[in-house]
Structure formats: C-alpha cells, structure tokens
Length: 219
Length: 176
Image (cartoon, rainbow over all chains, first blue to last red; front, top):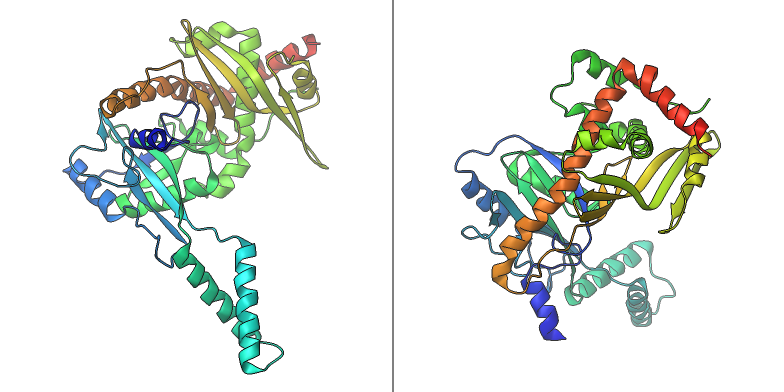
C-alpha cells in the first residue's frame, strides 16, 4: 500500500491535480509582462515564494508555490516546471486544524491546574484568553499541517492561466500570492470579465454592456 | 473596470442567459454550434441541469439529474421565468466524448472528464501526459470561450431583442 501511495505522489497525481480523472478549472487572464529573461525571473519568484514547512512550528497556516512533480520537495531548478510552452507548477496550502474537543480538553486541564495553584474560584477574562493562546501555540507545535495541492498551467505567451480548483478560498490565495510573487494582475474569467476582456468590443457595445439588464423569455 | 465583487453579482445573469441560449441552440439549431466550433461533432445536455428562478420572495432552484432524466421540467421552469444556472454537457468530437459541468454565474468548469488517455507509469511519462491533458482540456476551454464571445456579441446587438428572444419564446411555446 505504501509503495502505491509513494508512486502516485511521485508522478504528480494529487486528487485535484491536472492528471486526475476528473478536474475543475478556474480560468484567468494574466495582465502585464515580466522582464527578460522571463523564465529566470519566474524561477526566482517561485523559489522566493515557495511553500515553507510549518510542522514543528507554531504557525497554523502556510501558503506557497511548489513543484508539480515533487509537491513535498519543491524544486524549481532548470526546466523542471517547463512543459512544452507551458509553465506547470502548483499552489500548496498547508493548514493545521486543531479539533475543538482537543482544545477544550487542554484548556480544562490548564484551568483546573491554575485554580488549584492560586486557590481562586475563577480566572479572569484576560487570563482565559492568554491560556487559550498558549494552548493553541502548544498544540500547533505538535499537530502536523494538512497539505492541499492545486495545480497551475500558465501559458505565459498567451497570458492565460488555468487553476485546477473552483474552491473560492484557494482561488483567493492564488490571486494574492500570484500578484505578490510576479507583480502581474490576475483577472478571473466570469461573465462580466469575459465580456469586458473581449478586445474588439466597440464603444457602443461597451456602453450596452454597462447598461444591460436581465432578459425575460416569458410572456 | 468595475469592482470585481460588484461585477460578479451584477452580471451573473449573463452567464445564466448564455447557458439557456446554448440549450436553445442544442435543441433548435445544432448546426450553429458546429459553426462556432469546427472540431465539434455534437453538443448535448448530459445528466444534470440546474435552473434558477428569482422571485420577489427569493430564489427558486430546480435540479434535474439522472442519465435518463427528461428535460420537460426544465422547459416548464423556463416558461415560468427560470434560467439555466448549471449544466452537464457532453461534447463530442469524432468518436471521442468530453463530459463537463459549466456554471453560469462563474463560467467555471468542473467535473471535466476527457476521452481516455495513456497511463502514467514512470516519471518519463509525465511531460507527455501533461501536454496531452492540456491539449484535451483546451478543446472544452476554447469552446466555452468562443461560444461565450459569440453569445455576448449577439446579446449586445439589436438582433438579441428582435430575433433571438422571439425565437427562444417560440421554442418554449411550442414545447410541451
């Protein structure tokens, strides 16, 4: 079983990945250009904003670029992310989720201990907050982060990018990180942007688009 | 350009009108679809359709699903003022079939299944497999992009009110 899992991971076969049997795609237009040499600049940005491991760290979340083929061991050397005319890499979002029952248990233990030590009957609101923060920190250091990997296909020349998930939160992370990493705008395709981005729309068509209202096929 | 969040909700109806128009073409003018996409052999409604009707009281959603499900309920919903919100399409090119869901408000593609591709067994197979998949996905993406562009040009023209809307109304009034 372990060998099977290892093999799947080795070939970039994550559940929501571009090689999976069923995919979801959110489409973007990339606006702006990167200075020459383009691939070198992209590689620098991918490395700079690569995912940081947060296991054994107090951070609850980490988000960054990773390799399509080696999502748990990012490597952007050479042409590892260059597939034909496409740039193929992934966004990885690692998140620690601490079950509320575990949090509650540790809080109750700590609260009982503090009350016994001080002889008080209650602890103050501020102290409660502090204890919760300390427990969260303590648990975050011990709980491993769950990784989620979403593949990306970027056709740099055509300014098109496909992101292989429709999840809102993942798309928002992509938009923020992409702009920060490459200093380019990412415009998500949906009815308004798809209409507005049509480069041959006349002024009168654009005017109609701004004033358009829903049609009725009844009556 | 408008604020993105405002533009998304203000124009979500355009995506629903687009899907309704595609359904109209499938039923009444499939040759137009071949004209839009030269590679296309046929486009058909698959096993799922969601329609939405906005009332003053709120939003009504009608879902039709199942491989053998008829679309009469969908026609009835259109007659009552609903529009198509999400569809599962079967896109056929030669003897190959792509299946995918398309959502009107976002134009997002989901559950996209391409014709069968070669198995990835070694690391050396990856690049070929990725390029093959990209090529196959592009058929559907290109179809959605081009057909939406054709829809929007029509939607922003006088022809929409004088020709398209009456044709859709006639289809609905002739459908049982």
